[in-house]
Length: 148
Image (cartoon, rainbow, N blue to C red):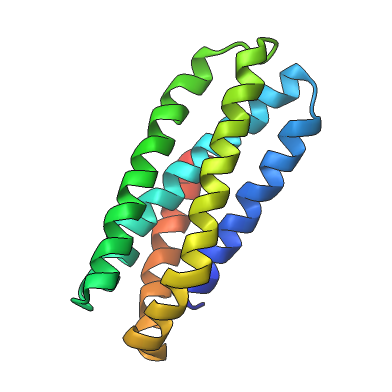
């Protein structure tokens, strides 16, 4: 699978979990929030350890700028993820934090899929994108096995 396809697939999975969490009752919200946290942590690890370094190798100022911004967005998401498990799902702050997290992730996804992924596919080439995808699938599989 192409690296960008794997990342898009993960984006869709997290978006689906956010939609389910919006409609869920409090006990179910906690479970869905835990799944969101788990998936986002694995996703950011894959991006930061495999995908972003490969894109950074392009050496263009645009690639550098986009990767730097992506790391900062991950940092902000991590801050919210660290607070979320401490908030009771019945508390109104829980819903507010989930909304903020969802919006942060959506913004990040739009930038990646709209600009970063097309640039990576074009400049890295089909072979390198597929190779990165294989590395990412291995890391994702290992992460899913550890979580189970």
